[in-house]
Image (cartoon, rainbow, N blue to C red):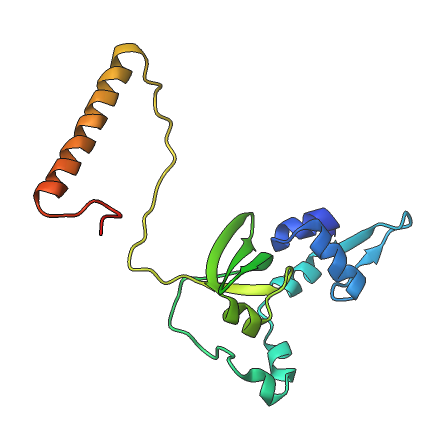
Length: 177
């Protein structure tokens, strides 16, 4: 059985160090304490925390199941932890930590209130989109001297042509009323 430091376990769980320490102090995470007073977390405990928890939902009273998703057809589901919730007016920005990545969603304030989203909570991002783009990071050679000027001239010419085409075909410029 392998024991992880709090930082290593937090990285595997996709949560911040302070969030995991908070969970430890709340008793939500089982640890072993070293002779020096440091917490260590077993791999099996991290696996338990990463596993979907159906038993917790089953223990809730029936009135707390309101709004519970029983099944969903969407397959683009990402499990993570709430990293930040910012509410302003009718909307809220929710940032999820999914592994070493962050995903930000803008949802209604009512949805945040109904879900009772708080930093450190486990959450599921369900992605529904009519378009998905895939990109690969590639190094581009630096443009210098004449090639940079040629590139800039072609770019500006294309923008000018695009703008003329839209205006000529009756498309109003953005913001025109």
